[in-house]
Image 1 (cartoon, rainbow, N blue to C red):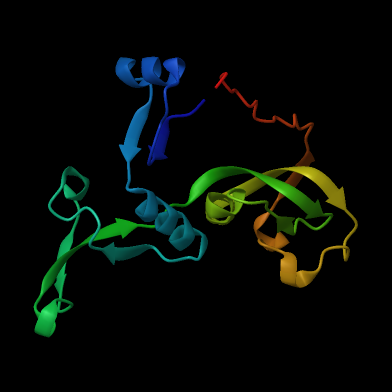
Image 2 (image 1 turned 90 degrees about the horizontal axis):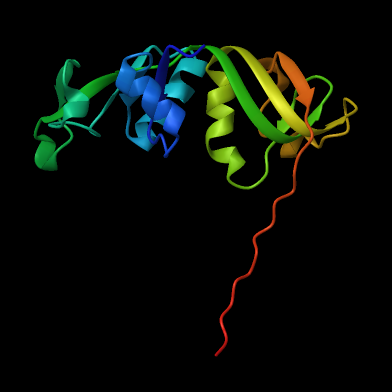
Length: 168
């Protein structure tokens, strides 16, 4: 059901590898910061931006290059044009939501989930808890409900690390 994956890392998933190697799945790698900014830009209505990241590498192949006077003493430096990402569907996981879709993330879930939610034409948020509207302190909302189209309360397994020690 997935035609193309845009990612900074794909892990070691055997099915993913099979689909990619067989040509069933297209893969586009991006540096992690560029990927985050592409999602943020797409979600903010920004069609493209220039970055130095990837200049002179395979990442820059086929992309527009433009010079800006940003070097020492205003020397021109190369930048590549990256396009904002607008996805058909965004699926994110949050800790808590109110009934209007305002989301609160915990810890590192706050890194990529907000821009991922923003760049989807439709965003589905799986949350651990749904609270009544008005229950969340507005200063603690990480993503406003305007970006969230569906909320699903999920069953969440609480995994814990297991301490492994050896005898001294």
